[in-house]
Length: 160
Image 1 (spheres, one colour):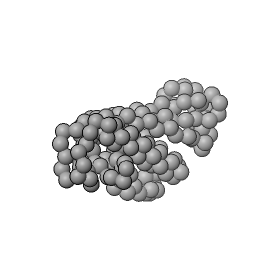
Image 2 (cartoon, one colour):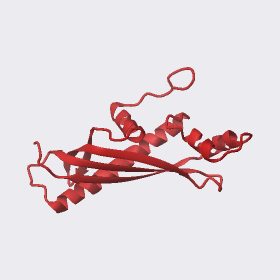
Image 3 (cartoon, helix red, strand yellow):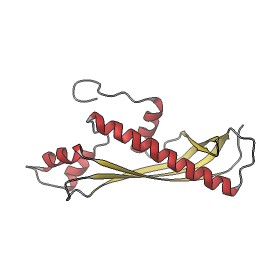
Image 4 (spheres, one colour):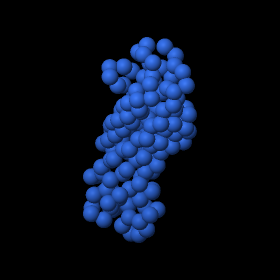
């Protein structure tokens, strides 16, 4: 919402990703697709943080770092999950999560909203009452995003 009306509606999956970015230890299931097989992992622990980088050059980048520890819960394949396959699932989960979160951040940026408080974060670290928010508005227009996900999945059995 902006100050007057609803400006954007998130899908259920986008809402889950928004909650993953804005809360720690979100309990949810996330997908990982690899070798034509869909896996689901349950997040036991999760955290995310961000930094605003390169503001001196007139262009800002927000770098998100997401950490997830989870348990493999579901598979569309009857095959046994080996250690090497588990590593592939983790890598696929990281890539899928990075792509989905990047798409969400770009959608939020395109709407002109700031539900994560990036502008407040910038203003708190670049104190100049006369110009800090005007500088932020200029930086916001050309904002870039980098997303790095660390997914650590352990295997404790599977439900088919």
